[in-house]
Image (cartoon, rainbow, N blue to C red; front, side, top):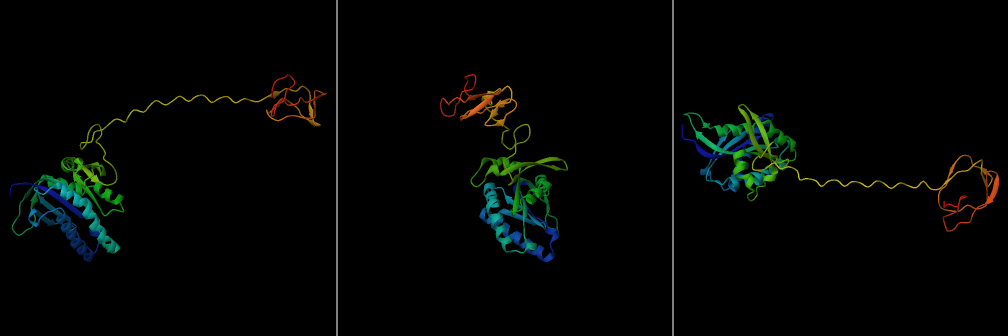
Length: 288
């Protein structure tokens, strides 16, 4: 086995590939290779700086460590979605292609065997495949029905590249997720669908968990002013106003004036003229 070397690991998988017939699968595989070709050319990756392995419904791409990960990441975030859009706008419903993608980094060894292809070995590669096959990444693509692809980056790629906000890379578009795998929990950062989510109880990916800013104390509300009940007239007996019988205590409303004879308790009196517009005097001299 050869010595392991550090590689940028790019994994791609076609959504719902096995549900297509053989003819459509062949078209999708050719299209995927074309998309990857143009994406890597944009990132400045030469043919001698990459290794590809066909996985049927996807690809493994190992990129030389001397290629800037920022360039690869920018191409995956911009060029790849555009190429998929161009394909899908012309393809039939059964030939639409959407991708799950993982960008990771780590040590990978090549152990080829006579008469076979492939032979890649490495813990970091295994972990990247677990991210690619995770329910979290599948769900992220399913939830973004209007997108053509979804990208997850490993924690080392997020820490070393994404969170620094290099040109064309926006860390606020990545959100952290924890993926349960065979030997524990694996953290990843998924592009799209929200903002960064710090780990519980501390910092995650260089993003500190901050307490919410203190809010100013609420002002005590002044009690509502009591409304005046208006003038109250107490009649004894059954007063008659213009011949109408009024029984019980009556509550007057300030404003206006009363003219004509008002009979109180059986005796008639003349109503007092208004001192000014909207006011009249009651029997005890108060204002109503």
